[in-house]
Image (cartoon, rainbow, N blue to C red):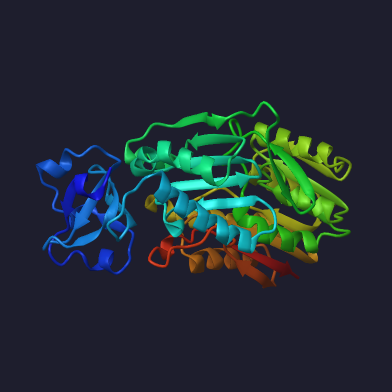
Length: 398
């Protein structure tokens, strides 16, 4: 569809400044939502003009969403497979500049100029997630663009993110293109090679955002006993074991994740070092408190999101405090503790404060050695600082 055939939406007077300044979102209260606009199908491409009729950009539109329009371009351009190919090639150039091997997040939504689109790359297999109606509408052309740019063996569609419900979308997981008959997707990191079940596993398969933190932990792991709570499929545990950890104990509530971690240990000949068990994190930490021999040179805690909505801010923040209070006593004097927070609604300073309080309540003290966020394959749009969701610390405890 060319720009001349697109539906036209008008931004209200004096409401165009953010969009003209480069912000990729236009909210519903900033648009003149008349009957014609409300009748536009969710996910449709639209032309966005200011009140005087000057072009602001081309984007996708959902009349039922608070974020009504998501801009793809501020120029008069056709949004088709060729356009998407250009965006994919730009994202690929950035990743190839930052990574020597094809295991990374290839597209991180707005920061890569593709709102609502997440693509993780596992060599010749890619996993796609469309989190908005607009992204879903672009999927056929996006698959064509992926075929042109990457020629993947398989494309898995992992549309089960809860945010899709806000866009009126149903969950869907399927093989969108190609075949997995020649084997599953594989990720290689820190000297280990792990097979992933993208159709049955968690999210888009692998938490690439913490690869840098895992490398820091692995570098300190030689000769240490390590506890990995919320271990998922064993990313921290297995890379630390490969780096020379004396022993690694992984805990997770997901039976599927534990099975994948166990298999990964076997496949990498690390099963004598890395052991995994299914358990709830907080009860497991409490039980370990009573075992005086259960003290570790490194403790890793990478919990799920404790703050999924604004009403969760209070109790969610306190959950990080409780996690610190339970984990800190398990760290040997002089040992390391890693803690992460993936709650984009929880400010980094609040997370750090709750961690500090929890450590003190555990009767421990220490210092922050490293702190950070997601890696360069998870860039942040400069007008969307709130999308910098991830924060983590590595502390040494006395």
